Amino acid sequence: MMANTEKVRLNKYLAESGLCSRRDADRLIEEGRVQVNGRMPSAGMKVNDLDKITVDEKPVARREKKVVLAYYKPQGVTCTEKDRHAEVTIRDVLDYPVRLTYAGRLDRDSEGLLLLTNDGDLINSLMRASNYHEKEYLVRVNKPMSREFLKKMSDGVLLRELNEKTRPCFVKEEGKFVFRIVLTQGLNRQIRRMCKELGYEAVNIRRVRVANVLLDKLKPGEYRPVVGEEKKELYRCMQPRQKAGTASRRQAAKEGSKAAVKPGAERGKTQR
Image (cartoon, helix red, strand yellow):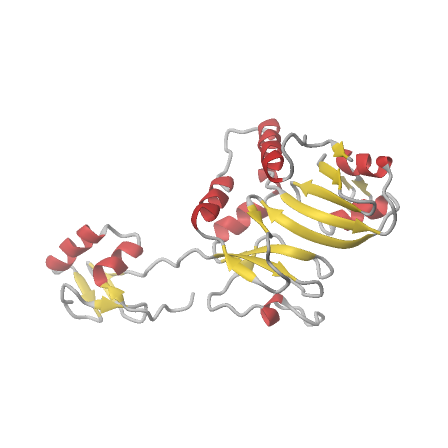
């Protein structure tokens, strides 16, 4: 965690640590239970992360602000932070003052929406397949698509390399060579493997949505902060469904797909 050198009032700092409210922080200061760098602070003193702050002789640190970025990963950029074989990694192209980690990688040849955050719980939730979080893609293949191809992609494809069948998913034809697909799992190079099993090659894959967050008008290499209602909704999406079974999770994913892809579109069905 990088030290935040911006000065804030001591009571606000204590509140941001999660210890208490600002009013209670004022009371603690008045009672002489707070020290800054070994000394009793004044009521309006300003501090930052470089100061040593204690309450009842116990150290207090401000909680790191949770940052979420929506980033358009260009083709040719590797998500892995340290890869001596990679020509360009995400660390080479993204300059941001807070250390962030990707939540759900894209392979080097794919492009589109990548969520970056310093919130480990959010990363774990997004990457856990049992949570059925949706990821939506536009895919271009190397030859005209048949109805049979679209139906098989929707019904699920046995990936012999992984010895696993993909989950049923929403698939919609967008053009002679292009289809839209909404996945709720993230197997290694899943879309490319699915296409290959059916005799096609995915020549371009662009992720346009993760949960409720859209790629929208971002251009390759650009990013924007996920804030406000969009961020709140993302965290609501991440809430664990402890009592929900597979069927209810699929229904939740289905409803999300209807809202984000096309009203009335049904999950696990093919649209042309």
